[in-house]
Amino acid sequence: MSSTQFGGGSDSSGFLYPSKVPATPSRSWLPAYFAVGIIWGCSFLFIKLSLGFLTPFGVAFMRCALGAATLLIISALRRVALPKELIVWCHLWVVAMCLNVVPGVLFALAETRTTSIVAGIINALPPLTSLFFILAAFRDDPVQRHQLLGLGVGLFGVLIVLGVWHGFGSNPWWAVLALLGSVTLYGVSFPYSKHFLIPRGLAPASLASAQLILATATLLPAYLVNGLNGHGLTLKAVGSIMALGVFGSGLAFMWNFRVIAAAGSSIASTVTYLTPVVAVIVGVIFLHEALAWFEPVGGLIVLLGAAIGQGRFQRRT
Image (cartoon, rainbow, N blue to C red; front, side, top):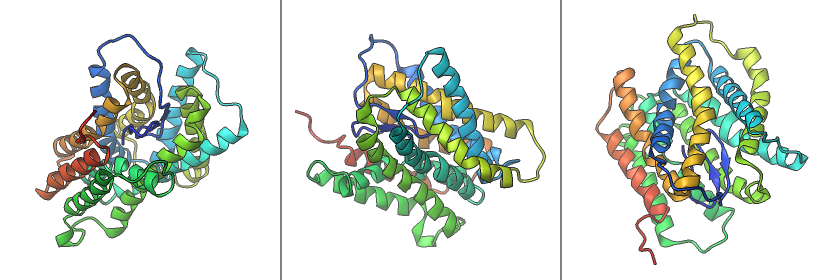
């Protein structure tokens, strides 16, 4: 999942960014943009491979711990302090539960029985689930027709992705619910962050570091009890969890913020449309996963729904 354009939000690893960013000199942002899209698109491949020696709890814990360590180092080098107010830490724990802890476990759990392709396509839904909760619980403006249309189109796309006419196909019902539950929690977290955290004006690296510290601490007991699955370590599995944590939950955030600062949050949010494409490609090439015709078709419909819901086809004045 990537950044949204609802005046502040978070990336796919749960990193917060402000609705207004400092102006920066014009520079090429495309390398960082594509790097973020590729890394987040590969996250589902990394999750699948990390399950070679880690349980779903282990995957969620390790990616948060590695991401937190990466951002703490960056924060120290940039002399960015952690939040000081207790209420901020409380709000960040709620966001960490919705963006890191529960989805981190559920996505890994689902990928024990589903393909990374299906997980990657379903992960294109957060702009729509965010829109739903903004309209339902955090509504500041009247409901727009294109927003309702986008939600409807996106839901139809999900049904196509799952091949609903075949039931759930090879995807167990509980795995599908785990994926949908994860992106639903993503949708809760974005307006929650905008309402309770973004107005405080704290540095993104400070919020992100604290959030991942809380996620790591929350997941630690589960990791100690059931973090390893008893299979042997492999270089591929270790490399995958390192990439997932350091890059997917660490450096990609910094690059995403660079894109926001240079090109704006509206352009940065379009990485949502790149990540499922990458997920499909790497799943087919590296995991040799079968691709049914309705999965990419449904994925395109989901992306269309997200674009409609975000008002990308509305005439600008």
